[in-house]
Image (cartoon, rainbow, N blue to C red; front, side):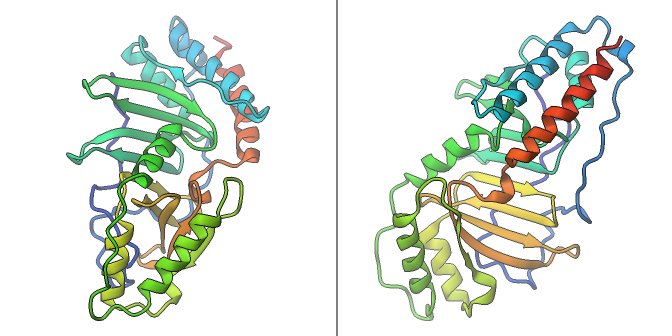
Amino acid sequence: MNTLPRPFPIPVVAAGPGSHEDEALDYLEMPQGMAVYQAPSLPEPEQLSGHDGALAALRQTLAAVQACVRGDTPAPVALAGLTTTELALLHQVLGEGEVSAQVLADDGLPLVQVQESVFAGVWRVLERSADGHVADTIECGAVPQALLRAAREDGASPAVAAAAPPPGVMNAPAILTELAEQRHQWRPGQPAHVVNLTLLPLSPEDIAWLDHVLGTGRVVVLSRGYGNCRVTDTCVPDTWRVVYYNSQDKVILNSVEVCAVPEVVCAAAEDLADSAERLDEVLQWVARG
């Protein structure tokens, strides 16, 4: 059964960088409050008795997280062959964390679905191939590689042909020039360059021109950490839209970031170390049966 446990919480409709605070956000079902770690409701050790596939996958996941802590890049843990019961037990142990993501196909259907577990940096990844086969894996690391690959591919899209901005456009050209300069200067490992659109005087025509030139990519991420954050990639290299909402679903910060992937999406090194420690404790518990 290669399905995520619940529907992905982000719809196909993309939010552009010019979303206003008074926009109705009915298309996005946002959770309330700050997400904090909650220990999963673990199965009793005897429930895992005889389900060696689930236990093996958990042990491989722990080894992969520990490899990440050492600075290595482990291979994903394949879940093919696990029974429906074993997958359910595995999901019960891993739970659902604060970050979800999709990579959308041209038909609007997801090519990739990602759900972070309650162990930061441990991701459940479903990836659909061209022939319809679905690979179900657990990937450990700062961010799933499928999201990075899709963003790189979107950034390699043909650039929008240069043209004079339409009437009413005032500040968008200067913002686009700044972003282009930062993309030229930015290198992997450097901090993100953030342009805060919320603080800038932008007309509706400015917003439309930014949308037109930057475009909207296929990667959509929702983070429910400190507040609610929606992240989408664009059709230019290393450029992302990042929008934060308050508990009333109103936009409180709207920005464009030049980086490989925004920090809000990534699991930090200390998060991975904590996940390795907690997952080890969990395995000691579930393996007692």
